Amino acid sequence: MRARNLKPSFFSNELLAAEDLHMAYLFSGLWCLADRDGKLEYRPKRIEALIFPLRKLLEPIEKLLERLGTLGFIIIYVVNDKKYILIDKFSKHQNPHKNERPSEMPWPENYINNQPVINNLVITRATRVITRATRAESLLLNPSSLNPKEENIHTGNSESQGGKTEETTAATLGSVVNEVIQVLEGSTASADSPPDTSEASLKSPLRKKKMVHTASTPLKPVDPVYIKFDHLSMTEKERDKLVESGRSIEDIEEMADRIRNYAGNKKYNSLYLTVRQWFKLEDERKAKDAPKAEPEFDWRAQAARESAKRQADLARWDEENKKYEEDERKKQETLNANH
Image (tube, rainbow, N blue to C red; front, side):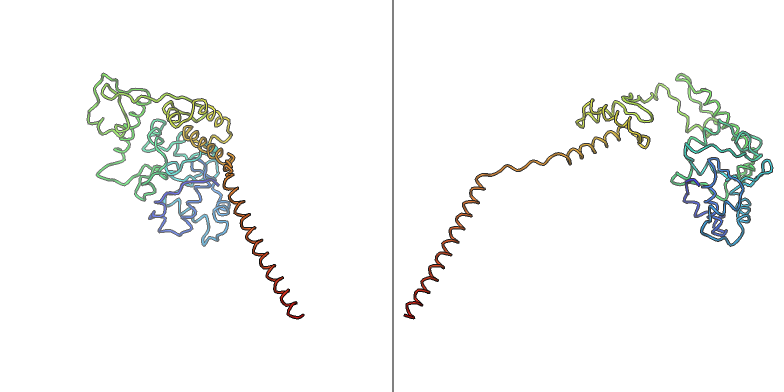
């Protein structure tokens, strides 16, 4: 099983709330069983053993899977006499790990080149620039997916809103695809050409994402890179910050080289922050290992203490002698009285 994202709106989904709790539990478990494309083999007994190892279902697992398919959360399909499950809009909700193995399972028949077909229009590489430019909605603050009224991407059916028809949706997708292809082919406005203010351009879904740099909008200068290796880099501006904090160029380069040779450096995202943290840890270690300076010996205080001790001893001896002499005197008086 794999680690997946669980979005907040999962708990408030009206379709799942109307069903048995085991169905919602099963649906979230299918995410962990599916591969990076949201596909898994239709093996009910194995699915039940992995998702419900300590629970006993009140109804057959096959019935729950069939109900999830009826509600549109999953698609159960057959390819070459073998059944599979596809989780609807899986890539919209999940961000698989980059090292996760590619899927080896086939796609449903209404997929071409691993992409769904909407109104006989194949969503190609151009449109993936739009959808994959952002992260999965599971990681957004206010995700809007898992909405019972959202569009069914596999059938092309959507609820009519404001008189829109399926043909209008297909035409909009077609214009988006054409515009993205133009962007990919490098057809951007030049610095001398005036901006496109036509009605079609103003209503373009990509207008907010495109940026045309003209003489009035100069490019922001890029800070030169000072050190770069693997996936980590440090700019000259960040180096200057370390120098201002009291670090020498030699110490910075030596610390960066230590990080380069560290086997676990893949967990770091910023070379500047890592170097600064390593310097801090090294300073703390040096301060801890530094020998503590012994206090300077005060001979005068020592002589005063010894003199006070001698005076106390002499006073004690005098007191003991006086007591001894008094005892002897009393004994002598007693003897004289007896004679």
